[in-house]
Length: 159
Image (cartoon, rainbow, N blue to C red; front, side):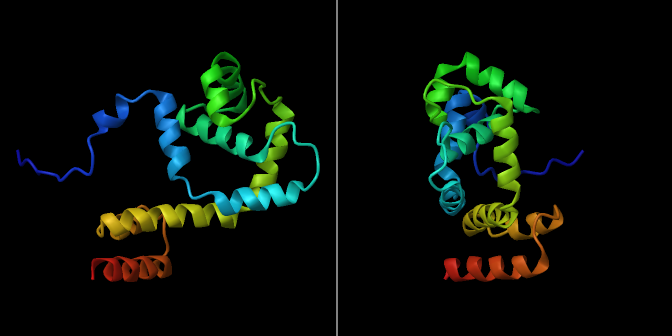
């Protein structure tokens, strides 16, 4: 049997030993979402702000980090976990289901901004790990023209 040594960017055990709230905090700090947040806040305008855009977005990200596969599971977690509500910015209240339905519908109108956030994250990773461009292409997550752009960013960062 051949053993292939692999270089590790980080140990998964470092992430696994962190609590869910700390992992969420890392995601919230790393997410390049300011343009999306400003756009959604501008769309809301001077309407009701019982559940702020940023708090709703943070809670959606929490649902992903906590691996909830539907809104009801996320809502139960928010109702149970006061620290999570605080980290998301929900001021001790859990949004009802229809608020999530409306928010997610609005969010889908900005798919290009969300794709841009993903591309930004991939570019940041590729600056550190140049081989990630080929990996991302192999996984079908980026197109050839995006790969060329990222390759040029990687080569310019390396020089």
